[in-house]
Image 1 (cartoon, rainbow, N blue to C red):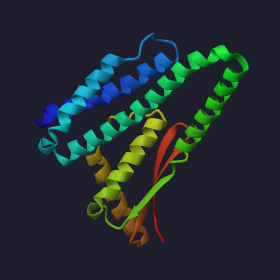
Image 2: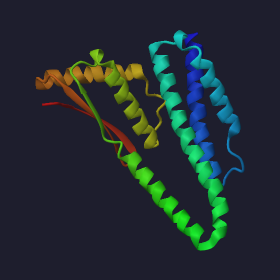
Image 3: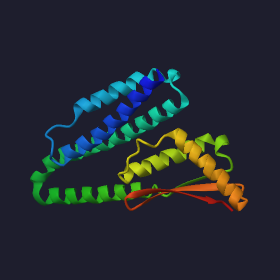
Image 4: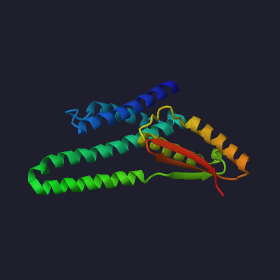
Length: 201
């Protein structure tokens, strides 16, 4: 059963990634219709597992929750762009007024993009990650989001490997620098997501 769930979650992640690609192609004029079939497949999978949460492990529930959040964020973004696309088609018939509206939309999109970029850097600190799992989950999600925003592949990144990494890194820094607390910082630098660790004074 665990293998089946893992396979389904991997497929769900691939479908969400493909949905984003095909919507971008649709908005860019490369496709005549939005990818309704992929969206239906994603919705079906999410509904199926929303009723089976009790049969999933902690790692599977966390991954399912992360994917659901990402899909919800994408769907809201696509809904807004669909509305803008539809309204833009009508407004362009009104000459100067339409151009002013288009310019305002462009400014708003630039403002939203700037706000999204300002979510980073993200930082969190702890003394022992094994006793502060919520913070580890938050850091993992922030790093995953940063990699996605930078266009990097997030599929190889798992919560288990991440937990092992921060546990070892925290112990290493505490011993090397005789520290009690370690801070982790997630940033997006150019086209790369970065995760940095330092002792906290």
